Image (cartoon, helix red, strand yellow):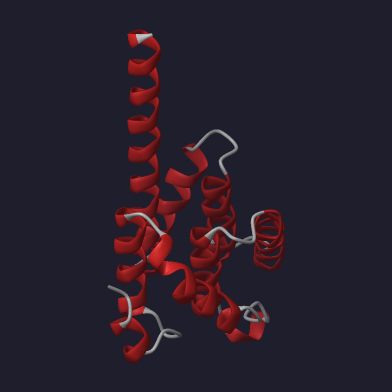
Length: 158
């Protein structure tokens, strides 16, 4: 029993550190092309079928269009379709909504992938209080630099 508990604890800590690394890299990804590439590399290394990691992988596909010389339209379309499908299957996952909100805020408007900004912002603000401390801090860091979340709305995130 102790061995099983130790294994589960180690697994949780390992997964959490991967998620923290992914979150931290994602938060810096738009600052430079090097940071974007670093985020893409970290996302690609992730294994498993966790929906949050899958959401970050979809965001990485979209962001790859920013730094590639290849078919940018196909990368955005594939990533956006993947992200939409994940959110459709997990509509109450606040972190997936945060990923979509940040992608839609930062993608050029001409692409046309910006239809869920208000919906996701409202969902995040309404469900913020139900989240754990780590996720609340992550949401607050995002809100501090968000173009969609107003100063008044940021003040409600405690």
